[in-house]
Amino acid sequence: MDVKALKKKIDQKKACIAVIGLGYVGLPLAVSFAKAGFKVYGLDKNHERVDRIRHGKNYNEDVSLKDIAILLKKKVFEVSGNLALLERADVIIICVPTPLKSKYTPDVSYIKGAVETICRHLRPGKIVILESTTYPGTTEEFIRPLLEKGGLRVGKDFYLAFSPERIDPGNKKHPVTKIPKIVGGLDAQTSLLAKTLYEKIVSRVHVVSSARAAEMTKLLENTFRLVNISWVNEAMMMCHKMGIDIWEVIEAAKTKPFGFMPFYPSLGVGGHCIPDDPLYLYWKAKHHGISSKFIKLSADTNDKVPRYVLSRLHQLLKARGVARKKPRILVVGVTYKKDVKDLRRSPVIAFLELLKKVQHQVVYHDPFIPYLSIDHLDMESVTLAPQEVRKADCVIVAVPHTKIDYALILKEAQNIFDLCNIYAGKNKKVHKL
Image 1 (cartoon, rainbow, N blue to C red):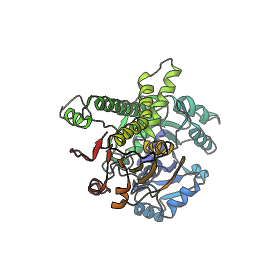
Image 2 (cartoon, rainbow, N blue to C red; image 1 turned 60 degrees about the vertical axis):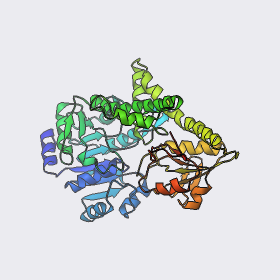
Image 3 (cartoon, helix red, strand yellow; image 1 turned 45 degrees about the vertical axis):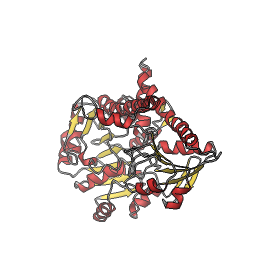
Image 4 (cartoon, helix red, strand yellow; image 1 turned 135 degrees about the vertical axis):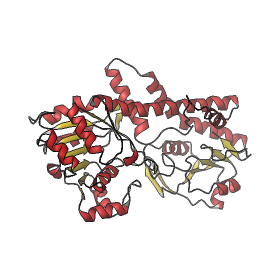
């Protein structure tokens, strides 16, 4: 099948799409294509995940259970652990994890595994698109040679592109279909194919000159956020030393209609993207003789914030006359962001472990996480009842979930360490970050 025939098939929505990886990126993408009228195979090696989706026990709040049930019943969406179904696909989209082996070393083993599976089912006329965030050059330098081992050639027999995922879990205002898509193929005709495909579910598709440019675009976006979050965390430390309210300063700076974008202090950065993605760029830059001081400094700064907050907690307890060696601490919110059931790289987890390490009595409340069994933690969420709040020597508001009775906390707590500026006004109980 030549490029014109594949484009026509996509235009007519007769192309079959396979999405490898049904996580926070792959599942919403697969469902969006199925709702647009394509036949979609959602493939994942995690059989438990596949069974949960099939039986309406979805773990992903960005996808409607009702939508999935309808699409499965119509048989336009098929969820399976059988990767041999790739044989039937005209379009193959890779949405697998890209973690780190160590702090500054990428782990592309999931990409490699997916590509090696694709190789066994690659036939002329298919387009392969990588969405997993990775270092510039992955698509061309790493994936292309693997796919060409069987004798087929990119741009002649099959097509290869990169289109970075931009999913923001829990963001109802900007679902996958409303976020502009970036595409970069290994040649112009592939970029056109990818553009044609994504235009079926996204209103705006921006084409860049190469897969490398597309890969770099995603890393620029997330590194921008990492650097600015680390800077505001550093500014927060400065302001505390100088007796200045960082939250007041940010609100004042926001009044400028240009040249400023607000970022807010916190326990650090979480999720998959911001903690890890910039370090992919740091690693690749080193291979070109460039040491990115901004990325390293930013990552190191954010890693230190939980210990800094712990020291501030101890200062607070001492100032308020809490003399117990093992004070009772109630942490409110443990997810990595507001109103999302997602613990990936949550800095609150690291903070809870620190509290345990210094032998504080630690409990937590989170309406999204009924229990924690992660790393060295094995805990259940306590009920946010007046007696529970009163028992705590300090309540730490770590994540500003909407479904929290903050008035109850303010009324019943002995001391509050507010990391989110929930209590914007002054109150003698409240100590702000």
